[in-house]
Image 1 (cartoon, rainbow, N blue to C red):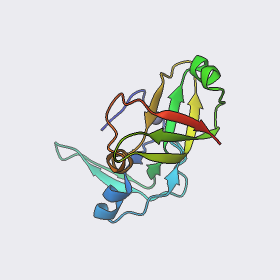
Image 2 (cartoon, rainbow, N blue to C red):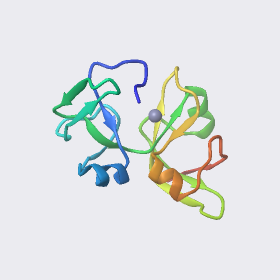
Image 3 (spheres, helix red, strand yellow):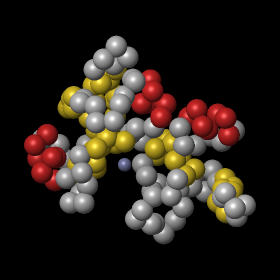
Image 4 (cartoon, protein in one colour):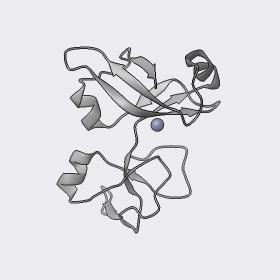
Length: 131
Ligand SMILES: [Zn+2]
């Protein structure tokens, strides 16, 4: 999937299940921190190939927040918090990084492995717990 806005580098975020299937060992990193990460070959639907020397990571779970949200929650950019997901498969995600910027809406980003483990659904109400 290609996401916008475009960046000056190419990054591929995969889950650890994807990684096992692909035989890649990605480091767990914040988006943009790709130094020393493994590369891969991307092949498009029309056969175009791009070989990346680096850029494959497993993304650290994080929450995007507008500064108003951060103020409401009493958290700051870069802070790590816990997120409790309620429900039968509920669990607490630890080390969720808070990202704050004027152009960010309140949204938590986790990968498919994490989401499925807790049976998270879009727009699910969760609880932010400070350390
Ligand atoms: Zn994100």
